[in-house]
Image 1 (cartoon, one colour):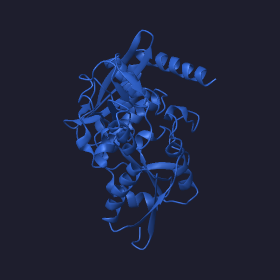
Image 2 (cartoon, one colour; image 1 turned 120 degrees about the vertical axis):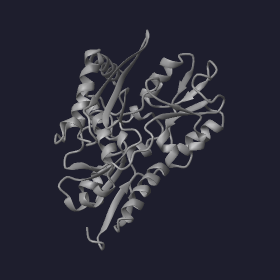
Image 3 (cartoon, one colour; image 1 turned 45 degrees about the vertical axis):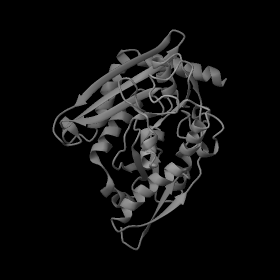
Image 4 (cartoon, one colour; image 1 turned 180 degrees about the horizontal axis):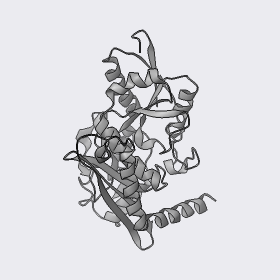
Length: 332
């Protein structure tokens, strides 16, 4: 891309989205690119009066934070969009592609405690603030004696509600607190197998128009191949399970001794308690992000499918079918 050409980057208007996007912009400008930022409101930002699961955007009910950005991209109002990858549906919109996944922040959820620093040390009846179905189910599995209440709004709004005494603790994505310079508020990091993060949590995606080689080449230098391969494996698992980004599915892919290892779980809350099924597999050897398959560019997705098949053998399909039926009946 010529130095005189301006790259228009689209972002949501929240403080976290703006911070993430400007982190990307700084790295693109360091390459000598001219970059402008366009702020676009999304339905997920506007509808803060209800849980995300109650906002429908697309057939699966997910994508509430990305659709308007994708529309602007397809209409040519922006050249690229920066998303939190965990918010993106597994099926990328027609005519668009993920060109770049920069260096990933921590993928884990964290607890921000007011009355106690850890999930285990909270007193019975303590109020936990979270609107994520995946987090709600895992809290109830670990501590059925706690009260879970929804909380929406940006990170600052949630922290103000915590400090005002409306909650005893919050469960948030650690990446957001780190990026906002609020890591000091974290009192506990929640890690698998006790607490599974969302698929692709902590990762950013730069989405561009398919076939727009000019823009793709401009952003590719800040791609992190290891992080990109890891989230491809996680999203491959989610896609094979036919679970949207709102389903209670967790996963974490990481590199260990040059091999990509993926673990994932499906959670279901019922009258008899919480049922959790988990599985793990590993992709080949060597340091090539394509793994043992070498030139097989679909190797991370293949790893995701293998882990999904293991989960399905443990009953994950039946669990997800029951949850979809229950959600449909509730919607009626």
